[in-house]
Structure formats: C-alpha cells, structure tokens
Amino acid sequence: MTDYLTKLPRDLYTAEQVRLLDKIAIEQFDIAGFTLMQTAASIAFNKLMEKWPQTRHVQVFAGSGNNAGDGYLLASLAKEQGLSTEVITLSDLEKLRGDARLAAEWAVKQQVLITPFAEFDFEHEKSHAHPVVVDALLGIGLDREVTGDYAKAIEFINNADQAVLAIDIPSGLSADTGTCLGAAVTADATVTFIGLKQGLLTNQAGDCVGELFYHDLNVPGGVFTSESSPKPAAHRIDINSTRTVLAPRAIASHKGSHGHVLIIGGDSLFGGAVIMAAEAALRSGAGLVSVITRSCHKSALLARRPEAMVLGTEDDDVNIDDLICRATAIVIGPGLGRGDWARGLMQKALFTAISAGKPLILDADALHLLAEKREQGAGIKRGSWILTPHPGEAAALLNSSISEIQHDRYAAVRQLNDIWGGICLLKGSGSLICASENSRQEVFLCSEGNAGMATGGMGDVLSGIVGSLVAQGNSLEDSLCAGASIHGEAADLSMQADGQRGMAATDLMPYIRQLVNPAWQ
Image 1 (cartoon, rainbow, N blue to C red):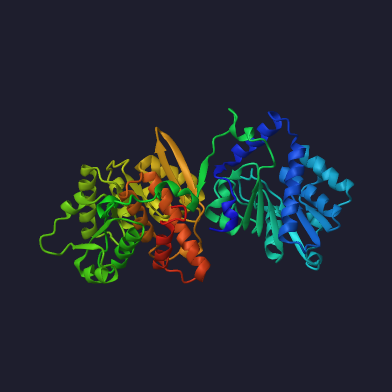
Image 2: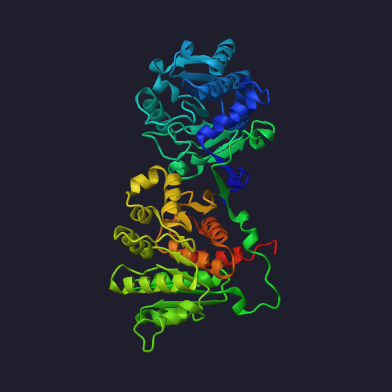
C-alpha cells in the first residue's frame, strides 16, 4: 500500500454529508466559514511548498464557489511568500458570494494578479520557471458534465505539462462516485478537507487524484460525533484491518483445525484457474484443500501443488456430494465455463451446499450461471454466500450494463446485496464490499491494490484466499474484507519488487503467505 494511504481516515462520506459536517462546524461550534477557508488555504499552500519546494510561480484556476475561495486565499499566501502569483478566474468577482467573495477581495488587497479566463495568454504561461498549477475550479457539489470554459480550462491544465495541486477534489470528478463528469483535472496531488469523500478512492479517481492528503481543518471531534453528525457512508479498509482474522494459531492445532476448502471449476482449457485458487487457499492457511475438476487437469494440478486432493469428474466412482458435505467452505467458479458440465456442477454444488448449510464463494462463470437463474425467474437470495463479481459479472447479475455499474459503483454494490444477499464484492480500482445486518447495509472500500492486477487469474487467487479464511472459521464479512486487503497488498508488494507491468497472478503467492503471518503475531 502506498504510504500516504495509511494516513487517511477510515470513515468515508458523500458530498452532502461533508457539507453537513461543514455546517455543524460553523453553526454548532462557532467556527466562521471564512476561518475554515483560511485554514484550508494554508494547509494546501504548505503541502504545495512541501511537495514542490522549487516553486517560483503559482497559477490558480478559480471558479465561482467556495473551492475558488480556497484558491484566492492560497494565491494570497503565495504572494506574501514572494512567489510570482496569478489567479485565472472563470467567474466575475462581483458574482462571487459569501466567503468566496471575501477571499477574492482579500486577494485584491494583496495585489494578486487576477486575469479573466477570456484574456488568459496560454502561450505566455508556459514560459514561467518551476510553475505549479492549483485547481480551484469546481468543488464537491458538481453533479453534471463539465462544459464550456470550465472544460477548456481543464484541458489546458492537463496539457500544460506542469505540476498540479487540486484543492479538495480534482475538478470534474464526482465526489460521490469517482466518475469523471465529461472532463476532469489530472492532478499530481489532492488535498481534501473535513470529511474524506468516498469518490476519491474508487472508479476513475485513481487517474485524477494523484497523491491524496487529508486534513480535518482542526475542527473539534464533536463535529463528527454529535447527534446531528452524519454516519459515514462507507469505511476504508486495508491490510491493517486484518488483525481480527489473523490471530496466532493454537500450538496444539492440526490440519483439521484450519478448515477444508473445496474448489470447483476448471473446464477443458481452463485448468489453471482452479490450480491458482487451490494454491492461494493453501498459502492463506487452509488445513486441507480439495479440487473438483476435469480429470484431464489432475496431473498438472498435482505436479504444481501436490498437497491438494483432486477429484476428476470423469473418474470412476466419483462422489461429488460426499466431498461437498465434507468441505468447510466451497469455492465455485474459477475456470468453470458455462456449458452443460458447468451447469451440472453448479446445480449440484448449490443444492448440496445450501442443504448442508455450507458457506459458498461464487466467482467468475458461477456468477454468470447464477444470473441465468434470475433471468429464469428463480428467486435465490441467500445469506450464506459471498459473491465476487467484476463490473462485467455485476452487470449480468443486475441485468444492467458495465457503464451503468461503473457510473455509480456504490449504488451497484448495494443493489447486488439487496438482490442476492450474502456479502458482495464489486472488484475494480477501489474494490467495494457490501454486507447487511438487520436491514442496515455497511459498505467497505479496499484501498489496497494497483493497476498491475489487471491480468488473468487475479480473481481466482482472491477466491482461494477468501475461501481459506472462511474455512478457518471467520465470518463471511471478515473473510471477504481481509481477503481483499491481503490480495491487494500482496499485489502492492509485488509491484514494489518488480513493477506493475508483467505482474502475474502467481507472483502474489509468496507475499500472501508473508501477509497471513503478520509481525504482530
């Protein structure tokens, strides 16, 4: 995990909730809005100078709201420090209201150069030495596509080949969903305030935010805990969240003490998927791992992982029901396919596991087969399973499109949980997990992982890790949250060692074993 992410708070908020926190600070704790704005500008300016100490020219792009007010005050601070400073404004100063108007008037008193965007000399600006662009165009209230001069300003910022600091959020990025609304600033760093916005850590945010820094503006803790304070919309998890599921083992334990994972999948040509899932389950600490797959894959699996027990579906005297009943947790889907062989195994696994009360982890093709049952009108909501779709699989489960899933990933993962029950994971940048208890949903965002994971087999490894943690006696929610965190952190360690490009799913195995044996044990 990137170091700056470890310093971020756990609680995540929507834009509306952050505005409420701001209101509580002002109305209940008598902190003037302009004081909060001054604090935000000071923190952002200090971060700018800390990150780019060679800066000689600060160029602030300001819009019309409080985000612009932060920008005007930052420009004033830069001017006071002797830096060449200019504000490029997309709103007439007389149209500014409230604290933003006060901030602009303060900048005028400080004799900050203020240039209307229509008069901005694009070519001349490229001649400044060591410039930093400050994005104070659009704040967290944006809910429509960026157009007109704002889109042109964003295009200039992104094409200027200069360091960019975004105040609170990169302009054009949705604070709630992490979706780019037509055009968005690509920042090198973002400083965000009061509440950590849930959209800053998922979907397209990773391509816009850069390094993310958070500050609570020194508001009292009661802003977040008073009776009128909003409950966080989601919670951030990472490798440090796994402590509850990685307690030291009893000295007198044996292989039967740590669960029996059954992996079902591996149709013809897809044997590697179950091999990776089985190995991940073993490396995550399962006492026993069995695999039901095509008989043609047995030799390869045993050569790669002789500790696994393998049942070939074309073998004589096959008793699949007995093996399902003996397992502690069942993973179905890696390399399963969608033909008659897959449908038969899926039906048998669902019927036997549900009848016996066995926890199920469904991934990959098993999710598509599950979606078919909904299309056939079969009601099959369960509490004893984990579903781990990527956006394409989620689209099938929700009878939707990938673009609709990605447009609001938070809404999608909640809908998955509403319709299918259990614990649901929506994979992707900033993977989301939704669990429900007593009709109240909890959403978790995993801040581990990197773009090197965009390769075949990663989901198979994750399903093996999660199945292993379930088999070892952890709750479905704890297993999925910890499994996603271990999976992502293993990829981050692999990236640190060898880079993102060329990362293979099996590269994670040694790091998985390392992570399930933490230093605190």
